[in-house]
Image 1: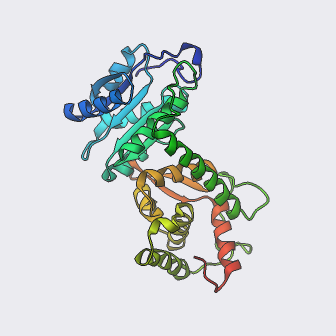
Image 2: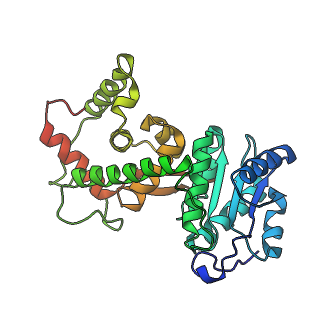
Image 3: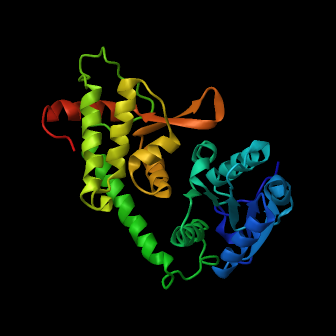
Length: 309
C-alpha cells in the first residue's frame, strides 16, 4: 500500500504545482470532475478507482485526493481506497474530498471520518467550491494557498464559520453537567435513579410537531439539525432501534452534506458515538453518547408537559 510524504504536517515540502488526484470508476465521470477542478485552478491527474492506490504509490507529491463515487460503486477497490485516504488524512498527509450520491451515504461514511476529509452528497457547485477552498486551507502553507478572498466560495466559508459557532452554542445549551461530555463514560441505564424516564410517544410528538411547521413556513426558517438529530437519536434509543447515518441525515432536515458535517462535529464533541454494524462492515450506526442521553432525558424531565419543540 502507498505511503505518502507528510504534506500537511511539513509545509516546507509542499509543492504548489502538485496535482489533485481524481479517482472515479468511469472515464466520463473522471473527465468531468477533472475539467471542473481545472477550471477552479487546480492541476489534476485522473485515474480509475481500482488503480488509485498504485498511482498514489508512484506519485511524488499530491495536493489531495478527489473521489467521485457513482451509484452502484462498491467492492474492495473503493473500500481500500477510502480506508487508505481516511488514514492518510487523519495523519495529516492528504486532504480527501469524496462526492457521492445520496444512495451511497452509508457505504462512504462508514469509511470516512477523519479530519481533513469531506463528504459531499449530491453536491451543488458552491459545495464543490467550498470543499476545494477548505482543502487549500488544510494544506496550511502560504506557498500553496490561492487567494480566495474574491472567490464565491469565500462567502460559503463565512457561513461555515457561523455554522461552527452555532454548533458550539447548541452543545453548550444542551450540556447540563459540570464536566464536558466524555466518550468513555458508561451509558446510563433506565434502572439508574438519577436518569429520568422519558416516554417514546412524547419525543415522537415533538418530532411530529417540528415537521408540521414545514406545511406553513419555509423549513429553512427553523433549521436546527443538531436538535433534530438529538431528538431522533433519543427516540431511537428509547425504542432500542439502531440509526444508520443515512437515516440520521434525513432526520436533520437539511441537505445531506450539511447533515454529515453536523454529525461529524457532534461526534468530535462527544455527543454522538459511531458504532460499526457487526453484520456489515460498510455501515455504521450513530447513537447518543451517555452524557448526551442523560442531558436529553433531564431536559424532557425539566420541561414536563410543556412543549419541547
